[in-house]
Length: 171
Image 1: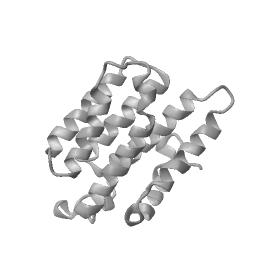
Image 2: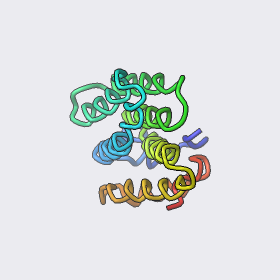
Image 3: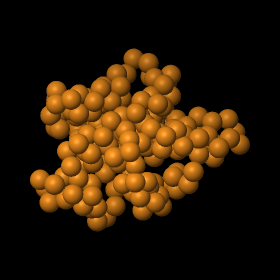
Image 4: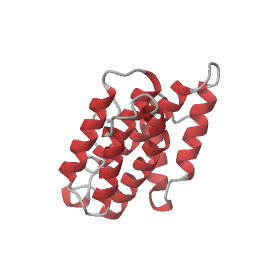
């Protein structure tokens, strides 16, 4: 479970009664796509012929550009998560990261899911005894790519949801 029981209005768009601007929603989507894409190779090393996670990342980027609808991006995210179901370890987490990224068009708070699953993927792929260090390095990599406009929002979200995101944001 990566979503809070009570929705944070900062991740609900203004037109739906929250405070999130469309520009910031798009920035969250692009950051989630970056997080997922950074670990995509861990999935593709196991399933090189399965395009679903890569397609989810492409669709969220296309949604940001106004080229596909929210429903199309969300569906692509769901297909990426379907690619994960029969896998274990790093490949599974990488596919889930892509799926979460694709879902950001529908629910902006999925941005943290993409980041958390990417960190889990890196941890799972790390050599024995190096998982924690690899996870912290991935977390820092992600934070280094946060656009200034959403940086404090995401960092606060990480603090608030760290417990339900497997405590991966302790970096």
